[in-house]
Length: 450
Image 1: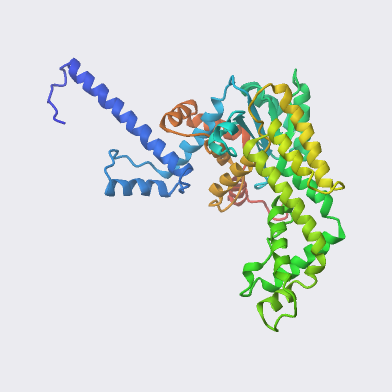
Image 2: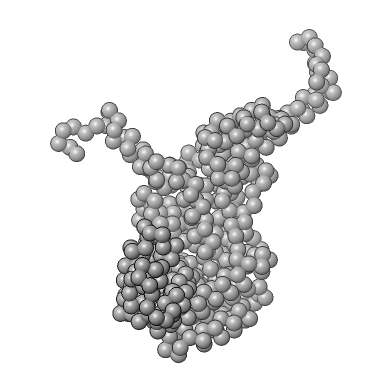
């Protein structure tokens, strides 16, 4: 663009002012675009903060990229956290019915974070399958060391004061969370219905029915022995699903299917040739065939539970899915504890759906918040010292559909000083700060004071 020389005392013409203003607008727009691109690379592409400036430099060399500005990676970190804080600050009530999904993350360092998601009731039927993070909005975030029902209740009250009350609260079966939600619900003018997540409810039922039985213990011991025999061999591909001390019954279906397939393998009649594959498998799992009746019963139970969860997680709970799931529960033996728990859960929660007077199915799974925690933990795995610090503000940014306009609006809601204030109020210390203070020369303890 050509420029015209002017004397320093000469006033700019209207055309020059218009050109200057236009250039300003273009400059601001480019700045916003760069910020949005950096944030989306960090969140959607899961690119490390240090890599983002290098990617922008690569853009300049290989594709037409208008901006000549490459931000420092520390700026990208601050923008991402400001985005999360801005999204929290602009939470407001909505007219359409919605459910709250709440959970505590597992410990990271010495702290836990309570997260509350808002999901419109119609999101499930609109998507036609299980909800995703794009359907959610993070409306509450609270970091604390001491977690009790008495500390959870006021946090939820504060969040619902800003966002409005949900038509129902969905949570897992954790006792502390149960108490906090109950206390919060009781303080409302109209108590909020509470729904136990179907996955955790069924896992608890399976655990109660099978875990302490001699048949299950024998089956479990057989799996451990067989896995040890096969893990480092060419038959490692048939090792049983790995059982974890926590949440093992959340993965029940895989174990049931594996057991059924192994019964088919063992159904071959006659003695196997010494050293053959079948002979080695039989040696790895001796007496497996004697557990046939238990394996078949366990596999049937887990299959029914899996089908029920597939229906409820993808279609929600209404009259139609209630009938489907109740009919499935009748396929289990009459004395099945899992069947009784499932029927009780269905009867209890269909009563939650009735007074809502909505035709849309009700969301009854909290899987989405587990996915959110998983995505967040993956993003902070690069940290050499895992600790719950201000990076928790990344959680709100992982929800919803972000674009340049939403990002710009949220950044305008939260400045760097707001970020510092939030950190002082919510994260009084971190492992890194304590480490620095401990090893600092001025604060080294004298001999005998450790």
